Structures are given as structure tokens and as C-alpha cells.
Picture 1 (cartoon, rainbow, N blue to C red):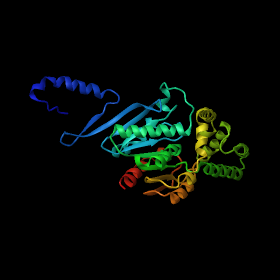
Picture 2: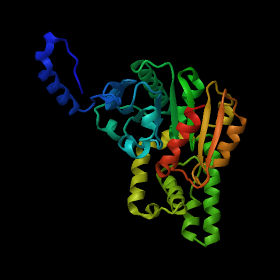
Picture 3: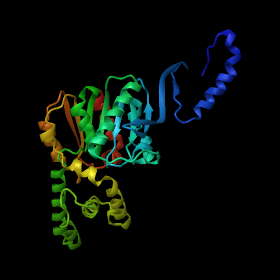
Picture 4: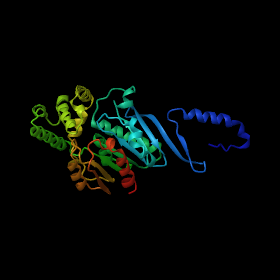
Length: 334
């Protein structure tokens, strides 16, 4: 990098160079990418911040160029964190967008911060999302951003699309929760049929105890145990998985059940911003046919539907390249 300083300021060069290299070693420093002639062309950011949302300190990870559109990714769960997976899941997106990943309350890096206790609710996380969107628009001087919601992350995502469409270029719904009660019922019935066909009395006994919405951690555990098994994931059979589900339920089951009771066919038949669906056909947790039906019915300025024939629920994790390429090539360029 060259410093074209006036002659009288030449004595400052060693100090400026030393300061530059010191700053590059600090977290949160924004680096300058060089053009072919060695001139500065693009400001690139690879940083993290702690922002205040609804009176809570929360962690975000940012990578890309502020010259590009902002893309905020809302993770699933609730309670999942992807802030440590920027390279694995978002490397291509961060070349076309300024990608923002977020650890919500009690999740990931945010869980390590000192925050006052709150009773969690769907409305609280919707408000946090709105405040983060507003912060990003102010911080990067944008009028709108792209919002992507995966699984449970689609709940605050649809809230933004329904209540604040003027702030979104588009909402990208990835294996979203549209009519979760119906989807859980389809999943549970399918698991029972599989158990009956296999003569699996243990599965039949446990699944017969499940009520919807889930009444307690044990019912959720039985459902997910056999769902994971159907997906070929043996972790669902391990004692560690049972412990995980019970610990998760202490924090998140009430919030999850609030989302399960929503039905977008009734509450959100029309959107004022574009919406795009990225769906895994082999998702046994959220039935793809429900997303297809909603896509056909919902009214929006623009919409499209991308069905990944061989992908399941964890589509962004298991097929990250195609996931990113779809957003860049088929959504950003519209």
C-alpha cells in the first residue's frame, strides 16, 4: 500500500505504517482491498460487534463490502448459532453481499454477555429483529436489505416482511415455518406409519405419547428422536441427545410452541415485498408441500420457488454452495 502524503508530512510515514499494521492485528478492523493498479477499490469488512437491541447486548458477525447490499441471516432453532460458520456457509455470499450473522438472546456469543433476564416470547424476538434491521440500515446507510430466515428464523423473518416490507429488498424463506402445526402432524403421522411398517414397538409406544403442540420436553424428545433416525442420524438414539433436548426445552420450548400455533395462510395472505422460497424436498420436519401451497396462494410484488430435490431440513448446512449460488444467481440478479 502506498501513502501519497504531501512533502511536509513525509516524516509521518513510519508512524502511519506502524499504526496501520497494528490495526490490522486487532479484531474488528476493516481492511482495504487493492485494485489491479494498486489503488484502493473496495472497503472489505470482516468484523464483529456487540449491539444493543431492546435493552440487551447481542453479538453480530459481519463480512463483505459495504458497497454491496446487506444480507441478514436469521438462524433456526430457536437457539442455533451460525456466527462461527461464516466461511463454511457464507463465503460466496460475502463476495456479493455484506453478510450479517446474529446470535440471538441466550445463543452463541450473546449467551456469554451480561444481560438482564427477560421472559422470552415471539414478540420479543420480533422486536429484536426489527431493531437490528434498523441498526444495520443506519450503520451502512441503506434504505433496504435482504432478509433470509431459515426454519424458526422465518418466524421473525415473516414478521418483518409482513409489518415492515419497506425495509426489505426481499425476504428469502428457507425451509420456513408456515403452518407448523399441520407440518408437525404430517411428520408425526409419517413416523407412526414407518414404525408400524417396521414392527418397531418402542417407536410406536413413544410416539403415541406425543401431543401437538408439544406439552413437555419428553414429547419433543420422542418426536425428534425418531425423526432423526428416519433422517439417518444416529445421534437421536444417544443419551446425549435426550439431555440436549431437555436442556433446550428449558429455554426455548415455550417460544417454539408459540411459533407452532401460527398459520400464515390465515395471518399473512399478502406481502408488500418480494418473497423467495428455498425448500428441501426431503425435509421431514417441515413438509415441503405446505410451502408449495403457500407460495401458490400468497400475493407479492415478485415471488419464486426453488426446490432442492435431494436436500432435507438442514439445506444451508448440507448444500451450502447451491444455497448461496441460488441467492446470488437467481435472486440478487432479479
